Image (cartoon, rainbow, N blue to C red):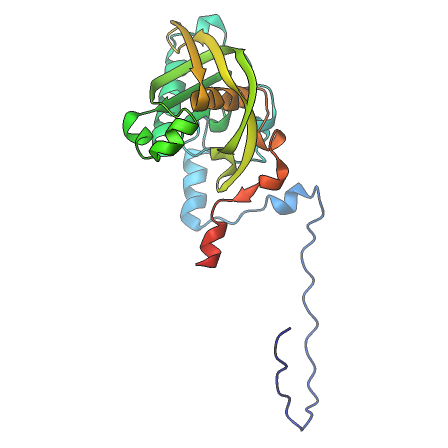
Length: 235
């Protein structure tokens, strides 16, 4: 309890103004929650250029409808096309800008069954050796998978902390299968087959979930859900 503030002996006929009514933000009031003020230049830019179009430069955050819908398969005639190549390039750029280890097309606002993953050697070396051994963290080149199909090779479930670019700043422990196989094609239509264990298998399962509108918070141990910056408050 805060220390009481000393009050002067003399009483003044002071009338406090009535507090302003707080704006109504009832659950479901999308119009009120979605209101956003823009500067003059932001408004002018939006008027001239129009709203941004996917694939977005920024990763969609939880709450965006595209993250909760099942993505559509890419039609065969679109394989190798300019649009799909641009999407693959956008995923690769966002991966490296993040930096992320995996990213799905829905996270950039594109509701298609496409994901990309990459763990360069330099990035892998940033993790402590003991952690790399325990979680089977091994580098792998950039892989883009279109219309991927997943097969579990080892049904053992291993629980480990997991994060997501679409839930920036949070993590939780999530159980995943230890080994999986994913197959599909790349953006040019060339076949892709990837047998993965450890952390690579976790990344694949995480991205496959995105393609079905599932987030890691749907599978997590809710008691481990945490803001990754919580310790900064104690410093």
